[in-house]
Length: 488
Picture 1 (cartoon, rainbow, N blue to C red):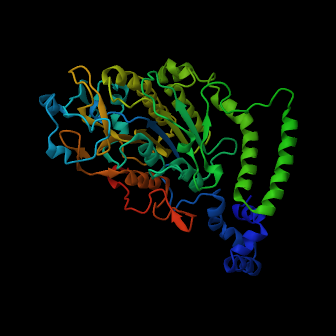
Picture 2 (cartoon, rainbow, N blue to C red):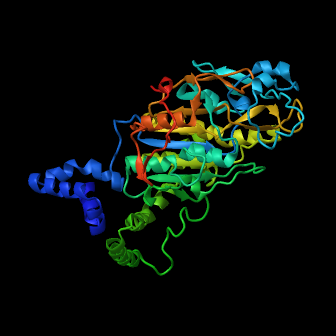
Picture 3 (spheres, helix red, strand yellow):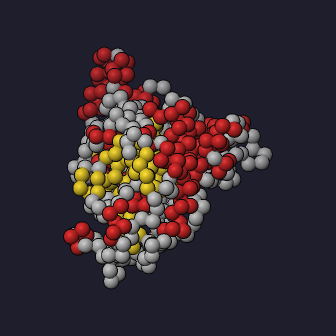
């Protein structure tokens, strides 16, 4: 159905007259010039329904896979090689480097801030010459497929606001996440699966996990249909995806038809757009009863898949299994896939925890990129890997040559991106010798969001949603720029 016609079909008398002269003018114009006018206005109307593509220009990326390492990986131990720090072992962080910057309450009371050089070996890889830690041997093999941004920065210094900032563009909860914005702006590429899917992967080490809740994949003030749908790692992938005993598909269909009729009556009387959203979600849920079980059934994957992804990909809930499902979703037209992997918050015992964290994700990330590439899907799929901030060069708690902890550090951290219009083999940004301050090409969270939207075909300042009397946007009201240096 044409989106404009669908919008008119569900508009109530109260909504029609509330639009005043514009609504009457549209009706008069359509009467004078015929139905083609309605078709021409379809793009405008979809700003209410969010069903059609609202992009401002053809984007390089059609899909996004966002791999968020919850807790903040240590850039110093993985990507931001600082060999000069070996000469600074156990010396105090100079005041000239810290510059009075804010610290968390977990280390602000320390008597001193001793430098903790990374205990891990680094080597340069690929034509780009990117330095990669020994903890990431698979990532090292694909550096020329990736773009490393070593100069990310944020104001948030604690996990809750920092994760929220990365996911929604604001440190305060309640706003739409980036996946919801993409769902609203680009619509669905399939009829039988959600536009936006979320997976929470299980980490091997559970020493210090962070809270992960549905607020991170909320639609906020956008229509509820754009919220992420979370797939479970055990049992039914979605609660109640299967009919109860004794309930046939025919009975389910008849029940939904009755509910739809009741909801349409309520919509005509009250005009709440969320009622219409509920109708659509019931219909999608019915179709998902067939599509979701087929999606998560990986038994038909050939042995070569598990050679690439590793045997852990056979175990639901693992990161390797999650990224395998992400590839299957891309093939089936899912627009945005968010995967969370927990326990990267290494305040202590870096030597005991970081190796297992890296082992959980390293091969899976490599497999995902290579799998998408060989299937011709990487060019249209933007893959993002990173956390919510970085880690300090100084040690939190006890420091030895073999072990240390690192506190939160918002001033600089590293993420990588691949595919979907990103220039491969790129290293962008530079930090000082202490990986404490950015000395070249800073990239703020807002710049990151503006760049992602650009790759999808949006001018971030024009991509808005009217709420509480203001044109709201993912990048907010402060300055944000597209990072041209990382674009293909």
